[in-house]
Structure formats: C-alpha cells, structure tokens
Image (cartoon, rainbow, N blue to C red; front, side, top):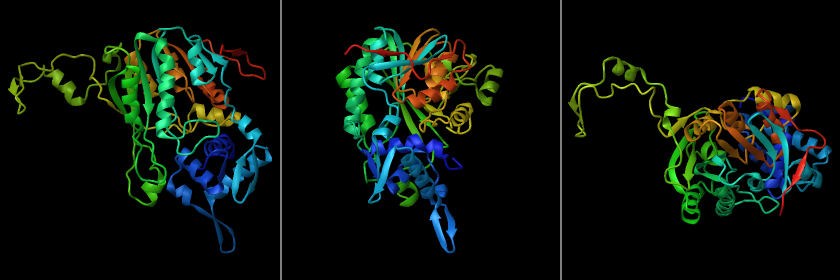
Amino acid sequence: MSTYPTQLELQLPLLQVLAEAGGEATSRAVQDALAERFALPESLRAATAEVGPGQRVNRWGRHVRWAQQRARLAGYTTAPAAGVWRLSQSGEQALGNQSRGTIVTVAVTGLGVLVWAHAEDLAGVLDDESVQLFFSSPPFPLNRRKRYANQHSARSHVEWLLRLVERYLPKLAPEGSIVLEVGPAWTPGEPTQATWMERLVIALEDRLGLHLCQTLYWENPAKMPGPAAWTTRERVRLTDRIERLLWMAPSTRPYADNRAVLAPYSGAMRRLLGRGGEAAQRRPSGHHRGDGAFARDNGGAIPGTLLRVANTASNDRYTRACREAGLPVHPARFPAELPEFVIRFLTREDDLVVDPMCGSGQTARAADRLGRRWVCGDIACEYLRGAAFRLDDLPGFVSHFGPRPAVARLAA
C-alpha cells in the first residue's frame, strides 16, 4: 500500500479493532492494529507532518484520530475517557454481524448462492454428502479477546475450527476434500510463533479422523514485514511470506487430478522434448535412464506444492467498486489464483464448492467461472455487499440487497 486507506475504508475495520480488543482500546493501540490490518509500510507509519511552527505530528496517528472522530460523530464510539475509545451499542450493530440461526440470501448467479450467515449455520442448509470441496480462509487466532466469547487464543481457536469442520463433515461427498488456508500467529508480547497450525492438523486427524493429504504453501512476495514490533523495530525476526493450505479429507484417496493444473513447460524442457528426450545415462544418485527418457509431452509440468502469487490487487475492479459505493474493502483478501488452483485440482465441472467465510467473494467467483456450483457466505453484511461486485458480471446474477431482504430462520 503506497497511500493511507481513506476515512471511509477505515470505518468498519476501526469498529472491528475495538470489538476485537473487548470493546475498548487506546488510540495508539487502534493505530497499530489498523496499520497491521492494512499492511501499512513502516515509511507511512512513521511519516510526520508540520502543523505549526516547529510542531510536527505523526500523519498516520492523525489520520486514524480523524476516523475515530467520524465514528464518534456517527454514534459508533463514545467520547474518549483517559485516552480510551469505547465501542457503543450502535457501533456493535454497525458491524453488521449476522445473528445466530438466521441466514439471508443476498445474491445469486446461475451456479451459486451468496448468503449472510454464521459459518456454523450455513452447514444446516446443505444436503448430506453434497459438497465436493470445502475451501475457506478462516480468521487466524487473535491476541485480543473479542467481546462476545469469540476466539482469542491459539488453543481456543483450534477448538472452534474443530467444531466448525465437524459440522461440515456429514455434508462432504465420499471423495470430497477440505482445504483450509491458514497462516502464522504470534505469541502476545513475544517474538515467538504459536503452534496453532500444527495443533490443528493433529486434532483434525486424532479427533475427527481426517487424513492430511498434502500441505500446499502460498508465498506472497509482496507481503509487508510483520509483526512490525519484531521485524522493523527490534529487527529480530524475518518477513514471513508463507501461508499454508491444509488439504485434508475423510478418505485417503479423495478426488484429485493434477492434469487439471499443469504448469507450462520450461524452455529447457521444451528443447529436451524437441530432441526426443535424454540419452541413456547413469546418474550420480544411482538411477539409470534409458534412451528417450522424458520424451513424452504430457501437456505441461506437474506443479510443486509452493504457489508463488503476489497479492497486489489494490486497485482492481472490486476495490474500485467498493470505494465508489462507500463500502469497506476487505482487509484480508487472497488472490484469485489460490481458489482457482484448488478448485481445478480437486473438483470437476458441476461439483459443489462451499466457502462459509468467503470475505470478498474470491472463492465464489472462481467457482462460478470454472463451471462449479457454489454456496458461499460470511457473517459481515458489509463485506458481502462488496463481494457482490465480484459476481455482477456473471450469468444469472441477481442481487437481493435492499431494505428488507428475505430472511430464513433455521431450526434450533
């Protein structure tokens, strides 16, 4: 990010930061949390501006304080007391989080449905053994406790994910897969990482009987250093640009076909094919290759488990549409290449893909464009309004957003 997020873009994340901090936080804590959320580079965090003769202020701090004042004028926060800002009841409602047991259809296409619902509730509207792929990027563990019994530690976060996955297991097809995009979490106040991802894999295997089919790794070369306290301030840690895609399944042989995700051959491989393959040789490893080895053109190379995709879409159609509509841009978007790769690899045309925490709607769009049926949802209505912009050019798109959307109450 080369510029500060706009005041409008800061409003919903600001309220979320306060909610995650238990409903109140100092101005400095809000500034730091928002800077992390928007991956703000250190140069922008530290920039100053002159406000009077010999007087300079931190530009980012002033920018956030303006957003806090806007939130207070709107009634979302209370006047600061002793330097602490507090979330008001109106602010809690403005977060737009859906109540438990209620789902709302907010948009449809010819292949899929976008719903406003808790991830746990979405499972209740799916048929048993209907889902070929459960793909999602759940929130990572939070160091600050949320107000309403939400996940706040690595251990409790693992327990929540276990309960969530367990609800979806009956919905999974016999050859279906679960893929969770997860990333590192840091120990509060320490330059050490929590072992929550490792605990999650072991718990999914031991307690739910799932098999770890493979771990894929997403490298984001554009990721900013973080946490800033350990990487750019104390300089005691490196930039962690790797996140994991945990591929698990109830079966040891879920459906998969790597021919659907072949990578283009390198120039050297194309030249080798043109020569008719390798000449006979015994390699230092002891392996013997006969004449014509690697002479067969299989249409491409089998990809490795490291997916290198820069997450740099800061001015794409989705973000422009959100800004024009006055909606917040989701701060934790992943690139379209991730769901596209996984969907191609683990599903066939017309299979059902489900993402109950779809954020900005990347999974929904990828599934639709690849001819898969899909059901995607999120707890935050404001993010779903933005996600609809990813879908409005797809066949059969209809938006149900409005003052009185259709509400369906689930059985307890």
